[in-house]
Length: 95
Length: 491
Image (tube, rainbow over all chains, first blue to last red; front, side):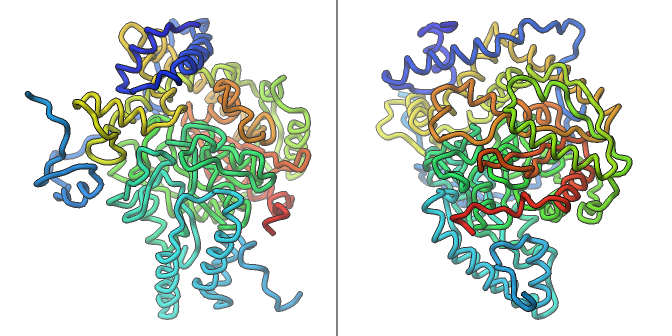
C-alpha cells in the first residue's frame, strides 16, 4: 500500500468527506492503486519542459468591472436546504 | 415504397427537418412518437433521469404554430435530449448524483439556450456517470444505463444515457460532455456518432464543472451531418464562460462535402500496440482503406507519449475536480445530511453521503496530488507531461491533416466487470484522453462490429478543424451503412 490509513484519513479531512468505517479499507486500497499508477510519471524526464497552463495557450480574459447581474436571491434560495429571512441557515458557529 | 414515409424514429435530424418543412408531419406527431418510444423502451435501458413530456408537447405545438406563420428556426420542432449535466431552467439537473437529486436549475446552460432559441424540443434529461466521472455510466446514483446492443453490457460513459437513447432510436440526437472521452467512447460502444469540439469552441456556462481545463460540450447523433447541424448552433463565443474562445463559427453543414482527395490521414503506430483488440484493429483498418479509396493518403505518425496520457489525466482531472466539487457543501443547494453537530460536520456528512464512491475517490486523489509537499511531484509534473503529449500532436499535425484510429481498445464490456478495478476502467480511455489534454476536436463514427458489438473509428484534428473531421466522417458514412444498423429490439 503506497498510502497508509492515516494518510487517507488526513486526505478525507482535507476534502471534507466523512467516510464510513466499512468503506475505509476499500478506499485505502483503491487510492493506493491510483497513486501507484500515476507514479509512473515520475520516470519521465521533464527538466526543460514548461508546464501546460491552457490547451490553446490563451490567457484569462478580463471584463470591465461593472455590475452585470441582477439580484435573484429568491430564485437561487429556492434550492437551499434551509433558509430564513433571505439567509442560509447552518448549525451554530459561534457559541 | 413510393409515397410511404420512413418511420419517424429512424430518421436523422436532417431528414426530419426536411419532412417538417414539407409538412409531411407535425412536430407534435414527431414528439409524440418519440415520447411513446421512450415510455416503451426506457425501462430496459435506464437512459433517462427525467422525461419532460408536457413541456416537450407544449414546445412542439408552439413550433407547429410558428411554422404555419412562416417562422421557423433551423432546428424548429426537432427533438433533442440533454445529458443531465446541462442546467435546464425549471427542470431537475442531477448530474447523476444524490447530492443534486433535488436540484432544479434556476437558469439554462448556454448550450440549452442556443438550441432552444433555434427551436429544438427537449424530450428529457439523460443518465450519466455521477458528475461525468466514469467510462461505463455505472456510477450514476440513478442506476446504470444499459447498452441497447446487449442490455447486460455498458453503453460506455459518461454520456451513456444520451448514447443509448440515440442508438435505440428514442431520439435522433443528444448532448454530451467530454473530459477524457465521455462523448466519443459511448458513441463508439453504441454505434453512434460522437463529436467533441475544440476546447473553448462551445460554451461551458451552465454545464456542471468536472475538470475545467478539459471539459467540452458536444453531441451524440447517428450521422456526422446531424452533428454538424447542431454544432453550427451550439458553437461560438460566450462571455459567460471565461474559457470560451472568440473564433468565427463556419457553417459546418456546407463544409461536409469538401473533397478528401488531398487529405493526409495520420495513422498512429502506437495505436495498434498490444492493448488493442485484434478484431477492432481489423475494423479500423478497413475504415482507413475506405478513406484511402476516396483519395486520402495514409501516413504513419508517432505519438510517443500516448501511454502517459492516462496517468497524466488521472492527476490533472482529479485535481481540478477536487477544486470544482468543493462548492457542494449542503448549504446553498443540494443534499444536506440531518443531525450535524456543527458546520464542519455538516459539510463532511453532506458530502460523504451525497457523493458516490468513484466521485469520492477522484476528489481524494485530487486533494492528495494538490496537498502540501505533493503539488510539484504530481500536479506540476503532470502539466509538464501534458505539454509533451500536446507537442506530440503538434508534431504529427505538421505532417497530416487528421489522425485516424480506434476510439476504444475493445468493444463494450459487461456491467459490473470493471467497477471494482478503477485502473482497468481508466484504461478504456487510452485513445480518447489525448485530445482532451491537448484541447483538440475529435469524433467517433461507427465502423463495424465485433461479435455483434459496435466499434468506432476516431478522427482527431488540429484546433478548430471540426470541419475537416466532420467532412471525413460524413463522407465515410456516405460509403458505409454501419450507422444505419439498429439493435433488434429497438427497430
